[in-house]
Image (cartoon, rainbow, N blue to C red):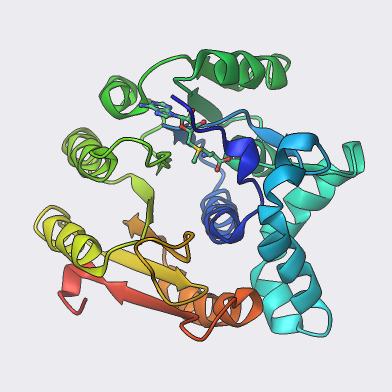
Length: 284
Ligand SMILES: C[S@@+](CC[C@H](N)C(=O)[O-])C[C@H]1O[C@@H](n2cnc3c(N)ncnc32)[C@H](O)[C@@H]1O
């Protein structure tokens, strides 16, 4: 396991994933009933963008930094990003260079009655994750394989929840393992909200993945794509997707506004665009 998320924190993929996650959790906490958040690939929870590792790659410059520049004078985009920007602001209040990963964003938005399950397989990253949330009684961390252990956490006692499946794509079969984890999850907890992040490096591979999902998901399933440049198999990552199963009411309309705005803000080249499809309606 060589992947460490600190080298990629705050990049364009994080901006998309974290912004959508923050919006979904904000919507779901609009009801008093408790809910459970399950992060199958949690990372360390929060990242120091001013530290050596993040500075070495500088990926946040094409993500978070471009976004901040685009927000000035763009009230519509700022409105769509509000829950994400609030979490960011709260982290920065503690330490100016801190960037919230998915666990920190969830912990900022969730309430006293909610619970968080965080899985991270890398032993060192798990130790940091565990230390980062040691004082938060809502959180349990597991040094386990997030794909295979997801089943054990479902269905949650609260009967309401969001599962984030966010692999490192270090292993060749991560896409297939993500699909299988989603299938296992839906069998145990059909009403859960599932968010699955995937990279897009090969159009045919992504379309085959969507076709597999369309056969699997019984209800609404959105496929969001953010392209910051034309896809090149041998080039740096320039596109990624989020699959959202059982999106809360209004998600599609919000994402249809968000994705093109993000693509404009984060564009690196001529192929930049953002798109939302509904896989359950076979219009992919
Ligand atoms: C993309 S990063 C997660 C980022 C995090 N979700 C966020 O948004 O802040 C993927 C993480 O998964 C971990 N990982 C890799 N394989 C795993 C597995 N099978 N189960 C759980 N974690 C795994 C990696 O060590 C890495 O920290």
